[in-house]
Length: 145
Image (cartoon, rainbow, N blue to C red; front, side, top):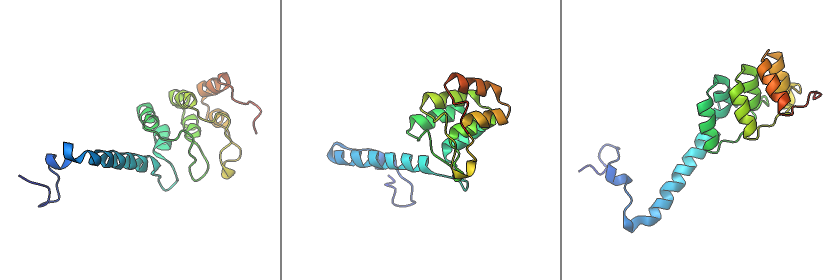
């Protein structure tokens, strides 16, 4: 039987919680929660979170999964953009709609270096008229500057 000591690999018995060690279950759950939060907090060199990247890539399934796992809906990258800005910029209507349903800030003007560009302005500048209509229908401020 390999107890995991010889080659660094774990055996199934290493992962099984016995009745005698019910306190270990809490430790396992805490470690899993910590790893999940760490994964969600990761950022690339631009400060983009996994949610930013999923919005840029148009991956609605990943967007839904990340939010279901507790990823914040409105994190800013280093420039100040939110995931909803990225989805508007890249023309991903279904993602914009989902983000709005989850509480994305529809009139956000980005960070200091974003020039006051709201998701509506972003969508319009990129010619994404379906997203412009969606944002207007959902109450985007047409006068935001």
